[in-house]
Image 1 (cartoon, one colour):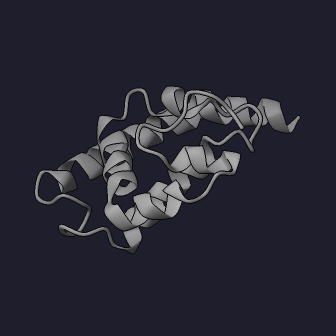
Image 2 (tube, helix red, strand yellow):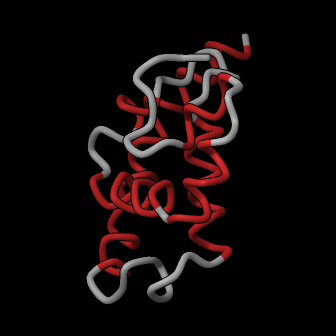
Length: 112
C-alpha cells in the first residue's frame, strides 16, 4: 500500500510541486551562484540533502534522480554547484558507501 501511495504522490503531486520549487530556485540563481550568495548556505545544503535522499532508492516507488529532476534544470544546477563546491566535494570524495553517489554532481541514474 505504501509503494502505491508513493507512486500516486509522484504522479499527482510531486512533479507539479517540483516545478514550482524549480522556478523559485531558477529566479534565485539568476542573482547569485547559490540561493543566497556566492557560497553555499544552510538552505543550499538542505536542498542538496533532500534531493539526494529523495532519489537514493530508500523509498520504493519513487523514481531515480535523473527521472525525478528531468524537468527541473535549476534544481539540477543547484545540486551540481553544491556537489562541486570544494569542501562538499572533498567530503564526499573520501566516502565510499553506496549512498554517497547520490551526492555527486549530476546524481546517479540508478538506485542503491
